[in-house]
Length: 145
Image 1 (cartoon, rainbow, N blue to C red):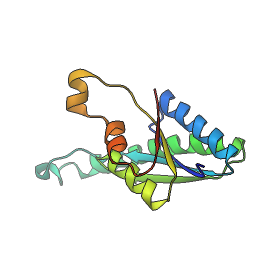
Image 2: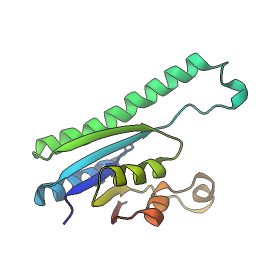
Image 3: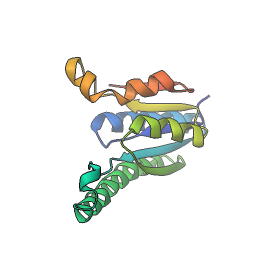
């Protein structure tokens, strides 16, 4: 049923729970896992673009390193069970867009992801990447909380 499962990860314990379930399901179905981590670019305004270029480079390099560590955890878990795992790293201010794009690009059958369950004003101002994925995903989404 689910042969190619996308696992977006932010390295949180909830993401690890989603990854573990995805690896188990992929193993049962002789499938594979696509581990995705989205590094956030340096937040800057056009007026400061040149002023903080060194700081920006260091920030983005660190963000990519952290994202790489997150997907490597998923890959290690998959390898322990003999499940093929592809690693995808992107950089964007919109993780939900990158998740949906990766699901399409990699022809995924499902997305297994975590939600942090924000409520009230924090949900309104911060938003819910999970909610955006649920609203626009062309494939089933399994949400872990």
